[in-house]
Every structure is written in structure tokens, then in C-alpha cells.
Image 1 (cartoon, protein in one colour):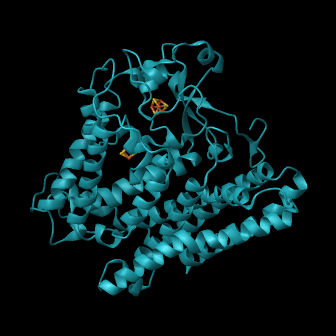
Image 2: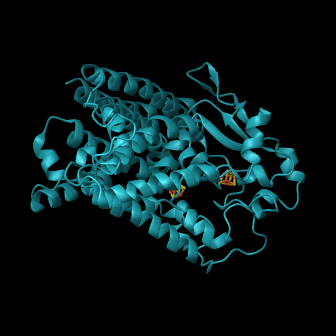
Image 3: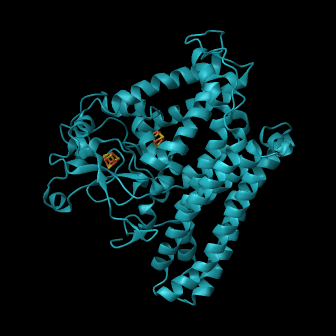
Length: 473
Ligand code: SF4
Ligand code: SF4
């Protein structure tokens, strides 16, 4: 990667270490952190679950659970956490806390020796994103109910916590987070575009250090719960930012860095290869974003009715169209453009699958950009609901902070389409820049790379024009 520059000006090897500040390092090395955030978050989710079963049925729009999960949490994830901080949500996520406790039988201290549980082996053929891909896709079948039926949000979140806990008793460490959690896959994929990373600092120190305590653990911290080798991993996707390696490294050789966004899109090593599972995650996320936009922010009421299950046949039709579009139509169209790319390049040796998979990573910035734009379209019109529900979380007529009667106040609604358009154009620039770099890594010589890049460039441009049309219509 050395020598590459983003937009020809920003050195992709440039890093700024946040943990060089003593206070931050002290915080990262404390066993209270991020445990305290998980506990606070657990309290929030208990309230959300309670609101799902006992609160606000009659006025879905004013339900605490719905507002906090689908307006604050989702928007924070897509708008701030993933693009800015990689998987910072996983650092504070309360879903696996009961599984962690079961395995360790403690929350604060480090347990020495073997962890509790059956420690079954996760099947090798499922050590990828496919389970998460399908789980997430199936979850979106119910997306039309999440925002109007608090109980559905309860079932979803309660179900995730239950599965995480049961899996914690059966499989080692964070197997659930790595291979099953529906929130994990898109965070992992889009964190490749994040402007932050956790990595080891000095390669030579790691090479000399035996045993590698960041992997096997010591009295200060657990060996990587995400089953990574902290001393040499190269992309954010499977690092849950749990900070254990900061605690277990006796040389303070792990760092939290700010970096140019998107660096991981160029990673393709034997241990962390580009893969069809991640490529499909990119298609599914882009497909879902198109559907969500059409259903929740577009002018077509009949699509909303289908997604919200106004009739059973409409809902089943939506599931069928949605699934076929995300799993077959979009990848199929992209396969066509990848084929053209191979033909244009003139390179006969390179497998079509490699061209297809490699270029699918150009959809990572693009997909994230669309989700950021979608989030802007959620928070500006609906953000004021949050101020309302905080005073009356269970919809029981409370007014805890004196804000329960604040009326719904949409913000900048006339400008939303333009803001979304600008976001998309900025992200499009990133997609193009990384796309060409990927082309140079896919085809062995520069002329082939230039020619092979043309069809993908056209594909990305069509997608952007399509979204601009929707945003600005
Ligand atoms: S992978 Fe899922 S359950 Fe695990 S920490 Fe992240 S969001 Fe939470
Ligand atoms: S490398 Fe492993 S131990 Fe370190 S922060 Fe990431 S997930 Fe945690």
C-alpha cells in the first residue's frame, strides 16, 4: 500500500495515534472501560425492551424503544460511529454481556485458565459473513413493522440478546459477534471505510514477544475475544474494538489511530482475502438501502403499504422482490459490468470471479454513503421526537424533563434532498478513487487497469445518478 495517495494528495500510510495521550491510554487500559459503557447501555436497552412490551402501543411514533433504536441508535451507527470510529458500537454493545459473564463468571477481573462453556467448534464453512448476510436480510423483511409496532422491536432485540447468550454457552468467546450477529456484518464491512483503526504499533516488538499475550491473554486482559491475532491483522472488519489487547500487551504496543478513510478497501492478503461473502454483504446492504429509501422516504405509498404488510399478499410480494433484487438482480447486473471490465482490459487469464469480488468493494463507500444520506432523511424530520420521548419513555403520560409536550418539529426538511445529494457526491469521489486503485491491483498492467476500470466507473455513475434523481426529484 505504501506510496498510495488518496485523491493524489493524502498519504494512505498517514496515521495519528490517539492513544499516545496518557489519559486515553490509561482509560483504554482500565478494566472499567469499556465495561462501564456496556452496563449503561444495558440499562438503556432494558428500558427499550420495557417500552416494547408495556409502553406506548397506541402511539407508535412516540414509543421510546422505537425512537431510540430506529432514530437515535441506527442514525448514530450509520452517520457517526461506523464512518468515524469503525466498530465503536461493538465496544459498548450490551448484547453479548450475559454470554461474556457465563464464560468468565465475572465481569471486571480477568479469569485465568479455561473459560466456561462447551467451547464447541464453529463449522469451518460458516467462518464467513454468510450467516450474518442471511440473518440481516431476513430481519429486513419485518422492517415495515419495526417503526410502528414496539413489540416487534422488543422481539428483535430480545431475540438477538437471547441468541448471543445461548451461543456464549456453546461456542468460544465472541463466536456470535464474529459469525452471527446481524448488526455485525454491515459494521464489519463498512468499517473498512472508517477513519479510525486499532493496530499494533511496532512490528519488531511483536515479533520478539513470546508468548503473544494479546492472543493468549494474561492477568491484565483476555486473549482477543474476537479470535484475531492483534499483532498482525490488517483490516477493521473483525476487530470488535473490545480493547482487551491494550490491557494484555505489556509493551503498550497497540494503538488507536485516526487514518484516511477507506484504507482497508485495498487489503487483500492470504489471511484477510477479499471474498464473495463480503461482496454479497455490499450488494445486500445497497439493495436494502434502495428499498428502504423507496419505502420510507419516497413518494410511492403502495411500496410503503407492501413493506408495512397492509395485505399479506403485498407483504409476501415485497419479500420476494426484495430478496431476488438483493441476491440476484443487483449482483447479476454487476456481474455483467465485471464481465465487460474483463473484456475491456484484454486480460484473458484473470478469473471473472476475482474481477467481480474485487470491484464489489467499490460499493462499500457507495453503500455507506447511501445509508448516511438515508440517516439524514430520518434524523432531520424526526429528531424532535427524541426530546419528547425522553420525558415520557413508557408512554404513560410522564414529563420527567419537562419536554413531553414539545411538538414535532421537523428541521431543514426543504434541504434534505440537497444534503443527501452532496453526501453522495462526496462518497462517489471516494468510490472512484478507490475503484481505480482496486483496478490497478486487479489487473497486472496499467493499461489493462485503465481499460478494465471503464465499465465499473459507468456502473457507479449510473447508481449515483439514480440516487441523485431520487433525492432531488
Ligand atoms: S457483533 Fe453484534 S453483538 Fe457483538 S458487539 Fe457487535 S453489535 Fe454487539
Ligand atoms: S484486536 Fe481483538 S482484543 Fe484487540 S481490540 Fe480488536 S477485538 Fe479486541
